[in-house]
Length: 253
Image 1 (cartoon, rainbow, N blue to C red):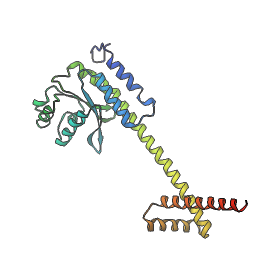
Image 2 (tube, one colour):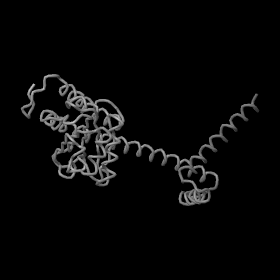
Image 3 (cartoon, rainbow, N blue to C red):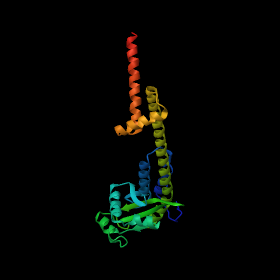
Image 4 (cartoon, rainbow, N blue to C red):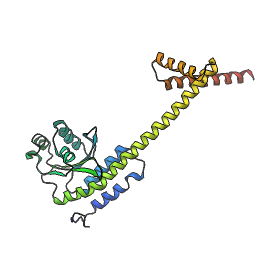
């Protein structure tokens, strides 16, 4: 079928990969699993690819988060360690970077020969762009020289567009899930603390403020968080109540 770049793709790999992308967020996969699938779909879609990885920006620094193969991680570790390479330039320029002979690549005189000796000779780095932001980059590598011709570059750029959306949506979903979990934890902690305050107040006749001061003092003296002190108090109170019920049951027989 013709792509938007005027490139004919007749093997269906791109169509299958794009279909896979569209279904990634319908389940409840962890973020890392979703990103690995995106990298694997990239290898499937782009002719000549032996491996791919996704690089995210963290504190304005590029870092490979997932890779479809171990050698991709190794290549990107060299790239970030040296501070030069196709991914870093793709992120900086927001333009596709391609090389078919890394060992003699003058743009990256330290990175190229190093990874060439590792048996990786071709690279295709594609910025993951949304209309208003750069999400990261997709790095595709091959062991062969000149593995990525014009067709592969065009397909890679076509694939990178929905991939950027999928990566961004996966990150948003994961952040929402983390916030929901933090909220649940906060509500649970608040409930446990309120229960502990009630126990202290019933035992001592203290006001809510005095009970909290006592709880905080216990936390400081035991060097554990207030919620942990509260949980211990509640669990102790439950054990005592059950022991009294058991004792009462025995006395009634």
